[in-house]
Image (cartoon, rainbow, N blue to C red; front, side, top):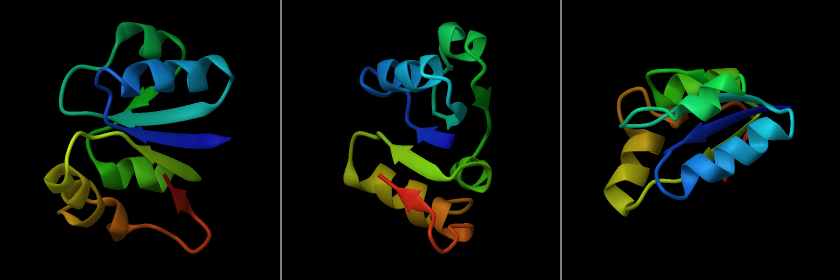
Length: 90
């Protein structure tokens, strides 16, 4: 399954690593560096939430607060720019 993960902090990185280890195709974006382990498992790092959305069937959002959630969903290059009918975000 093609999964997207936005936010790779203390909680997001281990969750994304487990998804990659389970064999899912994973596109990720975060404000900091992406863990080398995640990249070595085949995750693809992209620049924007919209790029994650374009490449994924399901999108996980793991950011710390409301302003960041709003930016990820509704900001410039946010998920809402390309969410398709039937596409899910968690």
